Image 1 (cartoon, rainbow, N blue to C red):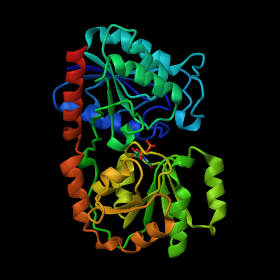
Image 2 (image 1 turned 180 degrees about the vertical axis):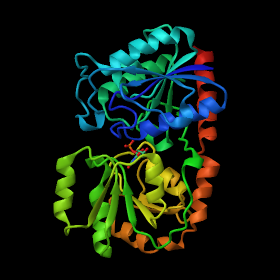
Image 3 (image 1 turned 180 degrees about the horizontal axis):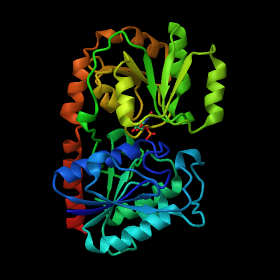
Image 4 (image 1 turned 30 degrees about the horizontal axis):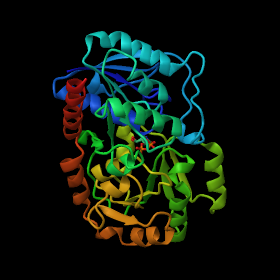
Length: 357
Ligand code: UDP
């Protein structure tokens, strides 16, 4: 199969601004290449693919980023800036897709979904968020009526946000296991990983650390500086250990030393890459039973799930986290979320999209 992949229009690959989509794209390219498919990637200028993905052709586009939908009102209209990066990526995509079988869009935005009805090539969409915008959800509903196979989701609970989708196609996600080393660090520190933004609920994890009289190591791109400062000021100085945004290799080295990852989403998290990355290093995860985490974490086997926003239960589970066998965590990823498993699901899905088209 010859696939043209459109990246996120928010930040270049490697910047952290694009969140989980950056890693998902790399995992997918790697899985597709290893299955023998041909992949071309269209991405913002300065983007880098993982070394193992050099066989994929990368095209750079310059332009203005989109505003991320999770930071706009649900009823906001669509905004497309002058010199739009998204429009530029799509123009290039349509041009090179003349020789391809399918365009695979990974940006959560209106324009590529609208184009599904208006160009002469199948466009498949990996929807990377729950419903964050009425205008996008309504458009998905309209396109779905004509092309019911063209949308895939990371988790069932994410897809539930789009209630008009009767039988959602669920592809999960994939991780290159050789990029993550297993470590048996049962006495390590507490970890939290993610974009520092309101929907990620960092404050609840800091609450737990403070109650335990420990520091919380925080890795990730600080998207909302005001929010980050506000949390810092609400707890005793030094409770948060800001560790910065690291490459996957550096991140897994540090993450593996931790005894638990706390995950505290305040939104319907589509999947939660950082959970699987922690599990791959042997780190159990204590999270809220909300969004993707509630489908990934096996309660009592690979971590614990607390009722959403119940910080006290979160705390009580962190206290007993040593009961989890760290080998279970790694095993779960090997059996459920390798790049091969992921790429196979995507290929089966794309074959259906192409056939129906
Ligand atoms: N991440 C990273 N370096 C860091 C912290 C985070 O590369 O120091 C990446 C991590 O690998 C994950 C992404 O940031 O792929 C966050 O994705 P997630 O699905 O957890 O949440 P999203 O940001 O998409 O809402």
